[in-house]
Length: 516
Image (cartoon, rainbow, N blue to C red):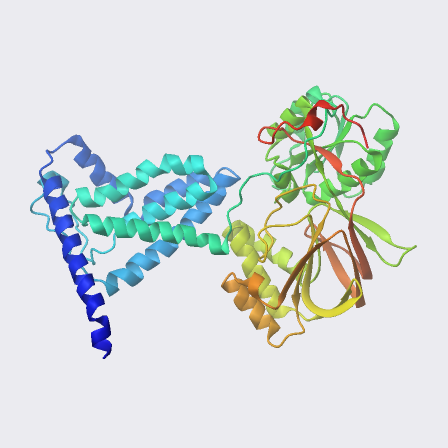
């Protein structure tokens, strides 16, 4: 009975196989009639350079030298190659064995010295080439467009040298493209290098840093690099304040502001230093210049400032965007301490997640390191008994983002906007049976948003009460311990200098800057 059901399918498959085989042989005969040219030598070298994906690993290393979309594209490309190679060489070749084309019809100038002997179907070279080019294009369309002809040439070289049929190459390309697209399921593509924000009216232009007081933290970021000299060179008219462990940065900034003629505050350092300066800028209603000089620079990257040159250009042009800042009141009303956070705040096992992620990120990249850190922290965690706006619950971790983070229903990765005025609250429930194991499996299959363990909402404020004191982490640093925390968005946004190259020229651009 079963044989009868599958007979039409088997018959159709055989007919299609004969047609594909006929087209392959016809294509091979036509290519065999091509006269020998210098391209034969070039294609032979090219196909050898792509053995074991060495060509793509080399290009990935070059792309990774520049932060941003090209580095993310390189990492996504390597991951895609791994998936494509495993599928083509580890699954399909053993499952669908096929003889390789005979070399004799081709001119000897095209023969490879060591012809492969594994199954011809599908082409592993085509799979890796397409996977890498597609993955890079997903992050950086310009780089992907530049790589597309090279990937196509590598794929064609397998037919030209007679080691694959045309259908092998097409099937390999399909496997490679599928592998690259599948990475989106676990690692969503960021649409833009910078979060959207409302462009402000004319903020003070700071040519050569005139009117700028900038705090420089030489201990942030690369331990072998002190940005002080470079900042002096680019902002010769600015007042520089070195950040040291034995000095009160806030008091120094307040002292400079009291002297008058301060148009803006600046900061070169990590997110912790940026938060300290941003709190003073918010209080005194002055714009902020951010120079990424920390290890990760989450805030600067969301703003869209990737290096010192971009900060110089934006401050010199007098262009800025409105950025919301998060606040958390620690302790009971009347005796609480207010802390500012730029990106995120967290309770429970989330501080451990951040520490592990930062430790593993240099080796694995941000997204894989984050998932591995979350799984590890969950395995070690103990439930946290909390009250969220009066509703009692048991959670493994509580995340509060300064603005909605993307992707929704997954581990937060980036912000699409900087001025939403909302908090992104996410938590993993600990009051369900097998909740820890369910959360880990949901993470592994990128199905967290469909799990009952996961909860998310967007609010303007959040009151959190705990039975016992717990550590609070803001922007990746443990800053306090208490039994009550009230999260909210600061009533005023702070202008942060950023060139307005991609955002539309809103009408606000023509209005003069007013300090709130």
